[in-house]
Length: 229
Image 1 (cartoon, rainbow, N blue to C red):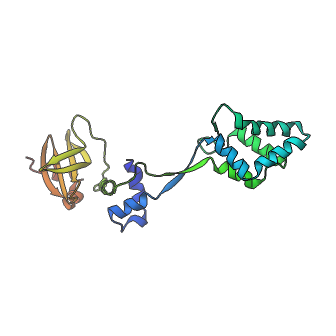
Image 2 (image 1 turned 135 degrees about the vertical axis):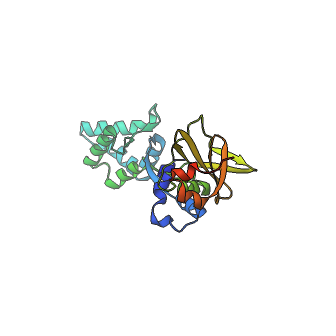
Image 3 (image 1 turned 135 degrees about the horizontal axis):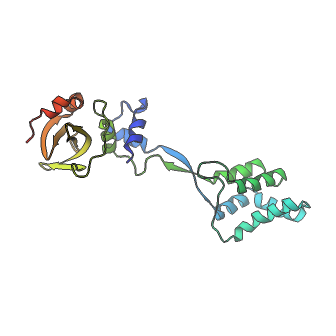
């Protein structure tokens, strides 16, 4: 999960009064448009459905313009192509030069109208979820607590930390990590009871409440002065 993107989205006012689950449900409805390569079969189907295929066949038999005929032949030959896809747009969303040139020639020659072109170009875009895999309530919970007292989560060093901790049968997940005086202090939140938290280092932990953690995590003296056991 990209928690930086998730945290940024959760800063918007529409999520402020939502529970973690309600926020997750809303987040999972978000989509973004992405360029894809267009299968030739879909291109041909759309050309047939919009009447472009008929227009191409008529123009092929009636045009006297060698350039227009070459473009028409090239388009009609796609159905027998040995490749499967056509690039209508580049990955960055800019028109593919070769395809755009063909479309321009067909439109300029009166063979293809604007609506037909728009239908073909629309095939190159697909809606994909903003968050994949889907956001869970736990993801929202972690993202909302990922910045405690204004400090950002950092990647735990493999040698000094794990992502989860099990104490008395309860699973805790890491939500923050700080280095104080050369020691790595970790903050964990209980997956099933968010009000329970642990802080500690070197496998010595002390239970604290979430309110305490929020209020004091940025205070070195408070973190270090806990009695770990």
